[in-house]
Length: 502
Image (cartoon, rainbow, N blue to C red; front, side, top):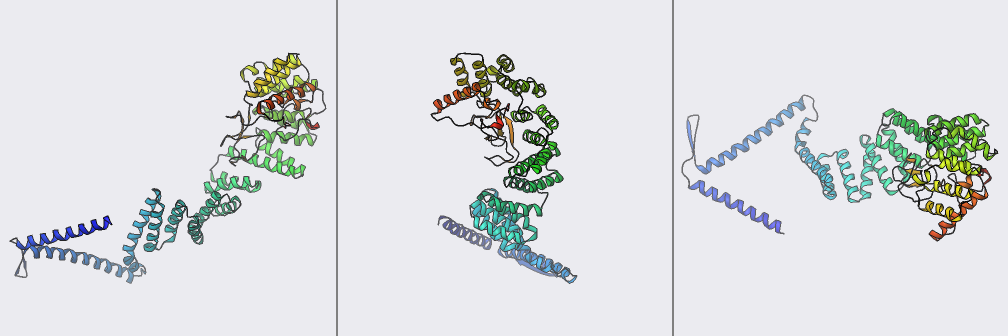
C-alpha cells in the first residue's frame, strides 16, 4: 500500500516537472533556425525540444528497419532462422536476464524467487534444458520434493540432460534412505558417464553396502582407468573386495573357492591383516603350513596384530605350551620391541607357567603403555608368582579404567568395531577401518581382559578373568557376560583353547 502510494506521488511529480519545463520553454525567447533547400525554418524552444525527440525516435526506428533488412537479406540467402532470431532477440534478452537473476537467487538461498525467475526464463527462452535444472534445484532448496522429482524426470527425457536428471533423482533417493533404488540409478548414471568421479564414489559405496563385490570391483577398475585414484589405493581396495567376497563364500559353505579368494586378497595386499589371517587359515586347511608361516611373517613384519598370532597358533594346535613358545620365536623375533610382540610373548610364557620370563617380556608396558591388556597380563603374572590377592585386584582395578588398546576404528567417524569389516557399520564408509587406539573407550577390546582364556583354558587364567568380570559387574551394576573374541567365538570353545591371541 505504501509503495503504491509512493509510485503515484513520483508519477505526479514527474508530470508536474514536465509541465513546468514546457511552460518555461514556451515563455523563453530564441529558438533554432534550420535552412533546408534554400528555405529557412525557425523553431521555438518548445518546438526544438519536440523536434529533437522526434529525431531520436526516427533514428531508433531507422536502426531497427536496417536490422530487419539485414535479417531479410540473410533469410533470402538461405538462413531460414534469420528472421526468427531477429524477432526473438528481445525475448532471449529478457529470458537470459531472468535466468541470471534465478541463478543469483539460488546462490543466495532464495528458493521461491529462483523458481519464479526460472518460470519466467522458460516463458521467454523455451529452453527446458536450462530452466528445468534451475527449477529442480530451487524446488529441492524449498523442500518441494514432488516438484523437484517431476522436473528431474523431464530432464531424463532429453538425451543431453539425461545424466543430470538421473543424478538428481539418485541424490533424492539417497536422502530418503532408499539405497536400493539409489544404487540402480547410480549404475545408470555410471553407464552414461563412466568417468564422473562423484558417481563412481557413490556407486562404489552403495555396491559395498549391498555386498555386490563383483560390481564394486568393476567400478574400482573404472576409477583406476579414469585416474581418480592412485594404483596403490586401487590395489588395496581390490584386496578388501576380494577378502569380503571370500568371507561371504566361506559363510555360504563353499570352502575351496573362498580360500582361493582369501589367498588372492593377501597377494594383492600382504599387509592387510584380515586377508593375511584368512589366507593363512586357507593354507592350513590345505595342509600347507610353510606357506601359512610365510604369509603371517610378512604381515607381521608390516604390522604385528593379535589376529595374526591367533592364526599362527592354529598351525600346530596340539603342541605343548613350551613348544609353542619356541615356535613363536619365528614370529616374535620380528619387531621384538613392538608392544604387540611383547604382549604375545608374555601371554605365551604365562601359559607355559614361566612367570619371570613373562614379566621380562612385559617389561615396562604395564607402567608406560597402561592399556587394559598389559595390566591384565600383569595381574596374571602376579597371581602366577604367588602375589597376594590385593596386588592382583589392584592390577585388575587399574585395567578397568585403562584404555583398551588398539581396536578397529573407522577413520571417517571414529566408530569402534569389534572385528574388521569392509564397510563401517556406523557411517557406512568403505575401507575406512584402521587398527589403532580409539579416541574414546566405548567398548572393551577382545584382546584385553578376556585374552587369557584364548591362550589356554588354564585355571589361573580363568580365575583372573572371573575376578575382573566380578569387578566390572560391581562397578557397572551388571552381571558378568560371556566374553567373545573378535571372530565371535567363545573363550571356552575347543578351537580356541590353544590360541595365543585373537
